[in-house]
Image (cartoon, rainbow, N blue to C red; front, side):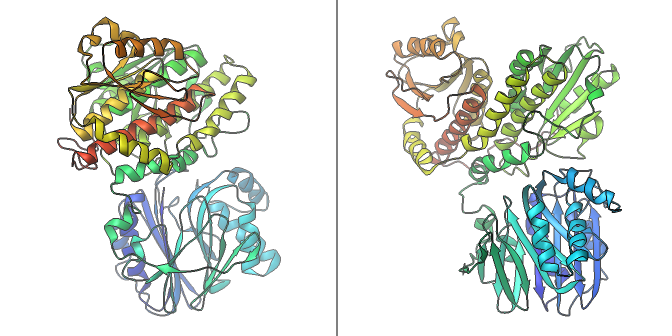
Length: 602
């Protein structure tokens, strides 16, 4: 997830771009850059790290005549956070900024390299500007060249492109990544969200997927697959805080809704028709590996637990999961045939980092699953796979958990195929299930309204049990953790088969049981366990595609063909339930007491 801004007009462009990028820095802060064309002169600046570094670099630069300009703040997906990989990317006479992932960039890069194009960066974005210049050389028409370029792109993108071939024009296109256009008299603004242009523009148009065009002479020409398109502007909100939340009450709520889109970015370029592809890792990483040990804390530990079922089932490799804070002091036996996997949203989790250092000293190969490139854990590991979740501002993790779990599922298939422990038919079936996940993560108005209504019944009592079996046991742990973190109510996750071995002693009408009852995995076993609780008068909220007659409350899910698709759909339900209970209790959902987003101490 990256941030984009653009401006066409006579005002000081540097300040408009930097101020806009400041509002978008939450979307990425690995690096940032701007490019400006005034007259026919093109200037550009890039800097690694926070935006202040770019401000320092541009101190002596001014741009106070008519011109065109674009800016970008980056969240790395392809290539390390370096100046060469920072946007805008340069061709011979053009610059481009891009948010999203170009799935077929390797194919395009190979084609362009054969034509003699030399690439400076490791990014997918650079292919866009070179492709544009190739077509412009052939056609001598910048807009037609841009149109032809975007028709070659597969994946998600929001693009702004400027060129000395059209020094008064910004070309734009959107497919799957956010982009809007702001208007104020003859001035035109572009941005990834409202906040960079609030106070500057007074009207806005939110681009739809498949729309593209150009801004010139204070006017915008908009096109889609049917040709030129008329569009209606709307008034722009003046509330920056609300705009940054896109109208949601809390960042956590926004991030729950974002999961469907974010999951597509996590899979993009990695989930192919018949295989899983990770450019970030070498096949040699798995040579000689006979077991896997995963180390993590909190929510990341729960994603690790869920994946341990998948690793042993799919790869036929023993997989142990350790809580990092315990692992550090248990004098663990570490064998060099073990792949040591760490999971961390921030990449700075102190216990996990120290556990990784122990494994490295013991000579183990290491791999991290992380959301932040160039973080301490990523730098310490032999290899890393980024989750591409984007910035998560809510302290209680939602989309980070979802994307970690998806990456681990993909990794189990990757290793299984490499080791020939699963058939091509199973791989294709698993990939088909993966492709259903973004739809399963979509929050409908009906679902959210139902959970909002139900939540008022769950504000009192003496606690919650979240129960499930197999991969749904770690999901029960995560559901209970989410509720604890933001509502401050007592909640525990249990394997449903363990209730009769002690916890069922707590069962009465004031004990709320959240039962995860997937149709595709051990349904009858879970049903029997829930019946035992119901017989003790526990209040049951069943989450299942199959109606359950003993449930006091029931949330019906849609998907039942594959356990992992059910896993992700039920995950959303538990997240929304925690959110709505917490809101009813009057809590600050985004900043729960006593907690921090990144735990950098023991």
